[in-house]
Image 1 (cartoon, rainbow, N blue to C red):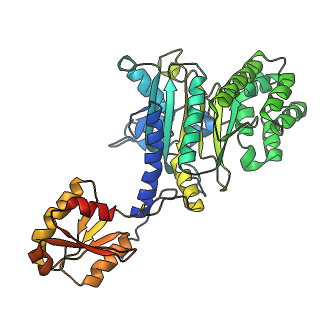
Image 2 (cartoon, rainbow, N blue to C red):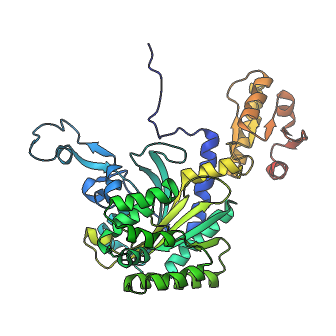
Length: 449
């Protein structure tokens, strides 16, 4: 019995139509990146596990896909040592930021700083598949490294604003600062629990306030400490009111106050730059990755229910892990797969994206090919996607082919057109039909637009 074809859970095939839609997203994002001076790089799908481990927190490490060593990986196993580290030396990348930091350190003598790069590649996480969450998905990262100026943060916010404006998606940019979270840990008397607090807070949207409070209690925080954090997570009002309220709460934490100063500076830039997208301080925003040290961002679609569709932040110490100290950077990652789902759900794709060709030359008479082939070549040289139906068959079958592929124009030519040296072409949407001299390519181009 033949095996039923399938793919792993959390992965997807993409059809011609879907790839056209995905490329619309990628092309839009790339275009915006380039207008701000960012250049594209790529890194390998697999990295050494030593590069990946310990960069994403304990929970992130659990989601790394490990690659079994080639050959007999189990030969010569020392049972007194952890087996996984002996049989797996490489892993699939979890995100694009850590490989980027490794790239910067490895190629530092070839780069000009601040180094501004973007990267669009797949990443893998051994997560439980669900709506909007996949095991294989693309990230579109944009980072600037080598400057501590918050003008870099502003530039990323401008990029987010422009990308979603072009995609016609209504979003909110939520902003916080990890120094504020560190200050909260100090203010509630548990400075050593900042990672536990951050990991718990990061789950607020997923599991709710009561479950977050319970998790913090399980991690060793007292009821008094949790009660101090609760109103902060629920703080409302304008950005200015939130900053004012937090200055009182964090008055005893120099780190926390520095974070508030950075937020105030950043929102000053946002106001001056005239960002059209709603930007708000969200003090419950944590982003549970250990390497963030300053501003953190998350973007939510306002008209479609899904997780964050873009996020990132400032990291000061990431390259230091690989031997390059004092190299601060900031970046955001666009979740292409979630953006794809949002655009599908909202019907925001331009019409005609799925059509790979604009003109189909029907195959009705071998003699007409002498006429058609040069015209098809001339149109292609002008950038027009053109097909010639390969088989001389019934016209209905060729019309059906054009309709299924969304081809806008069909050209039907026989011995009469060949003898006259003319091309006949029809607009399938309007029904308008015209004839042109085979050498009058400009008129033909004007007709098909």
